[in-house]
Amino acid sequence: MNPQTIVVKIGTSSLTQKNGQIAIATIASLVETLTALRQKGHRIVLVSSGAVGVGCLRLNLKEKPRKMALKQAVAAVGQGRLMRTYDDLFNSLGQPIAQILLTRRELMERNSYVNASNTFEELLNLGVIPIVNENDTIAVDELKFGDNDTLSALVASLIKANWLFLLTDVDRLYSDDPRIVPNATPIDLVSSNEFNQLQVTAGGSGSSWGTGGMATKLAAARIATSSGVTMVITQGQQPQNILKILDGESLGTKFEPQTQTDNARKRWIAYGLIPMGKLYLDDGAVTAITQRGKSLLPAGITNVEGEFTAGDAVQLCDRNLQEVARGLVNYSSQELNKVKGSHSTDIASILGYNASDTAIHRDNLVIKD
Image: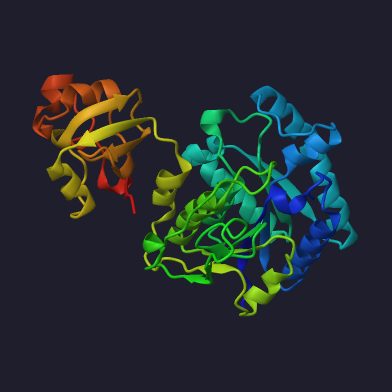
């Protein structure tokens, strides 16, 4: 196989044992596997959960804290200890690593997004394995990724990865939770055409320490596959399966990438930004942007929700309140409230100026799947 760019995400449930202790054997196997992949010439990024769980262990806490300030403090304790573990193991094999802590803020601003991409590129060129986690110590709710499944998919999109492996506490995706429903059907392959029809009962997190569940993994699959990335869900306690999957063995659940993928800018709009408001559209505007590839004009806007400024991301919704697209606005919420329902030729007379004939240009629009 030609050298590939591979993102591997491992969850807290795989990094810790049932008693809360660090699963050293699993981490050691993961380190050996990723080092072996690097020696084969592949470019590797590891997205690792576990900072809060390890911090709880270090501080003898019996459950994950719910208070934000306490959780951030515990994450600060755990992150250093987790990286110490990784560094000791990788160093024993002669493999250099780097730590990258991200919040959504780094991916919301275009310049920061590009800088993050450049940093990853240089580290990978140096043969380093970056270890990524959400910066729990400073992240606030509105800027959090929510879970590392989402973070890993965004990183895979950011660095134009070929593969994303989600290592979890089940061996693959099932039609239902196999821990509850014994006859749940295993799903080995999800083609790009089958993804939207996939019927799965997606539950919550599998352990008391985790934040993700199968629902977040399906959301990650949507982000990754739309970016041209092949995603695999497989058993976290057997990271060596990554090597077998790359060699063609059918293990875990494989999600095929979509053939038509958005460019990097549109992926950034769709997944990197937090919408600051909503625009409600009439039927004509919905048809124009979703079926004819047109820009959104003020005439098609029926209502404006939220407070935002020009350049912010907003959701575009139809008469049934369903999101149909997302984009970057050319006007603030106050300005759009004044010109909604009006023809573009009337913008100057209403506002006293005309920054653009469009509310959102088609180049800054992403249609929802």
